[in-house]
Image (cartoon, rainbow, N blue to C red; front, top):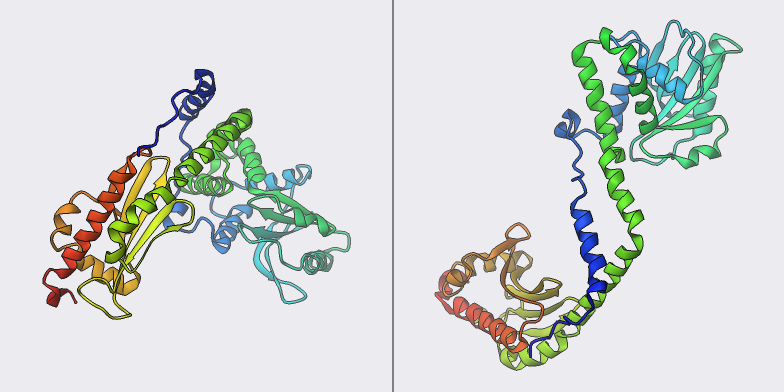
Length: 379
């Protein structure tokens, strides 16, 4: 009753898949470099990032980079290089309607309002924020220029719905910073330059800006037809394996029906389930702890897993597996789900189903033997 795998397919059908796998394995591993913010667990905290931005956007702060970041921002907004004069950077500026604008930057020639978004959507009242920026500028000079910016990790298309607002992504901003960095690095404090580079890398990691990642993306573009064919072929293979479950169920049922409470039964498209609780000699109660088996089938074959359902079942199972004959049979079994279940036996995809059914029944018997062993200390 072993399934015969089809080896008669023509080589020209398999060759594209083999070639595809070879090319995919040759791609560079995409593992973004960790930064101090990643280690600290704060790379996506909007307030933390806004505080860092405020520091580097202020030309007079201790970083020694002058107007590098502010100049870069203005260039992304299409503004010419001009002397900005005295600059004030304010965090959490209160708006007319009681909101809080993340950053307000005032120079002698322009007032800039920045709403900063990392993962959150632009749900803020941008019209209210715009009036706040314009009002602040007008209180200093009637004709003072204003700019309103949503600085975001990814494009914030909703910004287009609000007149006067522009969207700049971190990717675009840091690209501009890098292009100007050579003019400023010599005067910078080394530690603050290092922290800026780390911050830029953290934002790039969050945005998925990795040069090597582009190679992976291009791979999927270049080979989309073959990949689609490969996925369809894999799905057909999985369906073929899933179709073997009813036959296995027919073989397994007479071997275990009197030893389990529920099942065996088909579940989802990839497994057969067996439940044991009241049938175990340790308890006959309706709330008896439940031991279960999941027999999965996939491209790697059949995988029998055992676990305890719920808190009571899990606690009982953890004691049960230390008793004979389970203790010896489980030596080397792979722990899954933080040790809450074990992968206890595997078979190839084309395994003889009689052999699989017999083995599963033997595991059910082993559970019964373990439950009967010294029940006073287990119950």
